[in-house]
Length: 465
Image (cartoon, rainbow, N blue to C red; front, side):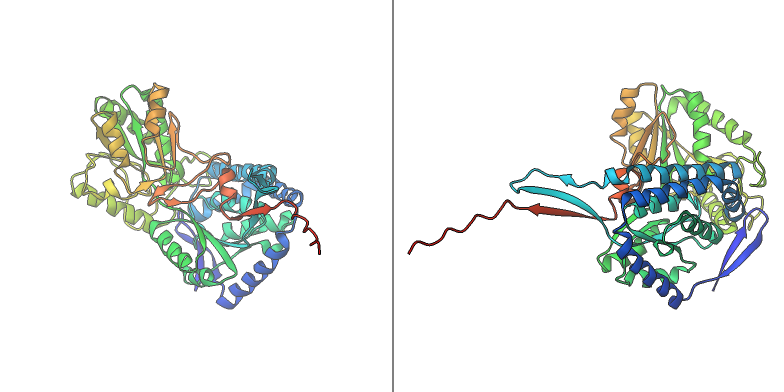
């Protein structure tokens, strides 16, 4: 089996890699398991030094890494640089805070001393997607390595060069080689890895189907998993919103990574009285965006990562239109089999259409008309997904109150949904479970061990004869 690095802009194969065999994969797993025994005993100071070094290397290599993303999955180089800078920031964040987050927690009980210790689990398998090929991995790897775990990366098959570049960053930073390895394997070997006792836990960012399969296999082995799956994020615009700012941000939020983001705004739920002006402004902002070669500094959005993804998105749009959706902004593919997909707007989105229930992973904005704020909340929650959401209103207290009623892992009021190392990231419902980032993320793959130390045992009295 070959793993291909394919340029979606030119349509050309860049490189081919021979997939690892199971014997080779198993040898790497064995090395990782041995490394886990010694790495867990390393000090936070040592881990921190190496993680800061990894951050430095990411910043030094941001040009070449941004170029790799542009070539392998079509991300504009300006966005690629920003992704690498965010990765470096997160490495520094965990290097600075891991010891504090995992410090023993004293608990007051009847014992002389009782506390919770946070201890590493060992080998963690990470199954990662192509859309943010460095960020998705770093937000797992930085906390996992700082906690004393070791990582095995099974990256998406269309970004092998990004995957190998990540391995080089950690190795060149001085981490023992077996503490982080990239596995160039197909999905066929994932099940064998999950069934191996040396793999202690797994994390996956990807599709609902892939998540359910990994969770089922890991569950059968009684192994911890963290899943970050799809999203169909609502972007609620109330009648009292700053419409100009909301529409401008809406265009940015829909076009994050050419629309290929789990937390990109996808469903624009707008109060009836402001639907027309909002759509008109959104249309203007989308049409102003420039596309082209991802290596060009002027390019604002590139192609989708693969032609088949654009074909699939086209079918979702066509099926929705056939079922009654109305095209407000024409775009899409110029012809089947091409990866470039221009922004579109669909209105009159109703139950029974793919656009109503499915995640559209690309630059298609869906317009939902709400009668009032209660109807907006109903529409927002009428989804099997629950990853992120945003609410637009000039009344901050109203926004906070509505945020509590939205079924999602994060709600942003008057701001675009984003991830940051300080705040936990993850979803509910079919968007997955568990959390990445913040102090919650680093505690996902540790044994939260209760340690109880009793007082001194009473001295036995001598029996008087």
